Image (cartoon, rainbow, N blue to C red; front, side, top):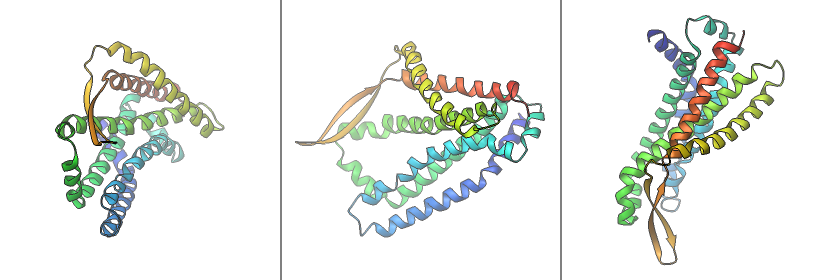
Length: 253
């Protein structure tokens, strides 16, 4: 366990620059939005504040690809492979550190944005129909958090897996990575759909939605199957352990 923690700390240190740059950019964006609050229409700055949340999964994609590319580039892969650690321990340390950065950046951005836009947020909640507002604070928030975490982990694991597969080739690794990345997404969807059938017995998740109709604001409750979420997690674990096996048993340095 102590050796895994050392690997984890090493990965965190390697991501400090990414953390610093991300925090500075998010802070600068939020400060800019604050200066526009009294200039732009009400609610516009609140909505634009969520743009970083669309960028963070892309950062995870890059971090996943770079996680082992940097090891090869800096020739530290020789030391990493010589350690008496399994491939899953090495890969999990990288995944855990990047996921922690992803969550911390998300919480920092959300906290900073809500701090400066709390009045607009309360106004938005107040305009929601009662049946939507009642579910918004519980089921919707929990489901949104789980979905967003998975949405960030998916590109990380698949891009990391794609790079490990490309290491079997001495040329055109970037092209191989792109092809494998695309095929991995296809397999994730296809296999996920098949595995999800095994969990059809699980209860659906009720989520309140709201939209603008001809008679004003309308609301309804839709039910999302929990089986596909579990299926995606299972297939992702398959990619994770396959990548760990490739690193430990198949790749020579």
